[in-house]
Length: 193
Image (cartoon, rainbow, N blue to C red):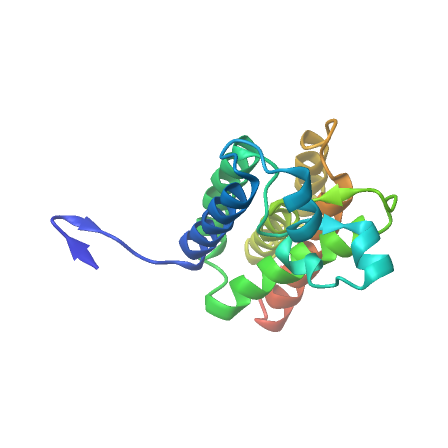
């Protein structure tokens, strides 16, 4: 679309940012608070380990990828998605990019099930870590660098995210899934060392 000298391009990254923002607007209305998502809303649309395991609410493994705890959480995740997503879309087109996002988010949420039953988790960061992992390992392989350097970069990025209140399991699961998927894509496209 061309509007007065500005070219607007709808990419998967922009679509996912829009989807996350739309879900945040919905959960804000349900919470009656634009700044913080209520506990009750998070328990339904985020990932409640008790609900997933004891009640069979498996759909939360997917919905929680688009639900955020508060406005700052959403903004930070969307900034990282914009940075890593647009770069990754240069390598992974269409359904491959979306597959990395969803599979990585799901892997992070499945790993989160190892946490206590009372844990409620939400956010796109597992999926974003997957996008980062897929990109970094694909680039190392494309430029003939040892895969070990991709693992070091990934580990450093993961360690930077460690802090209180952060779901390390979601980050780790998403990152590992992204690394595996990115490596598979690079191998299948016969990018040499």
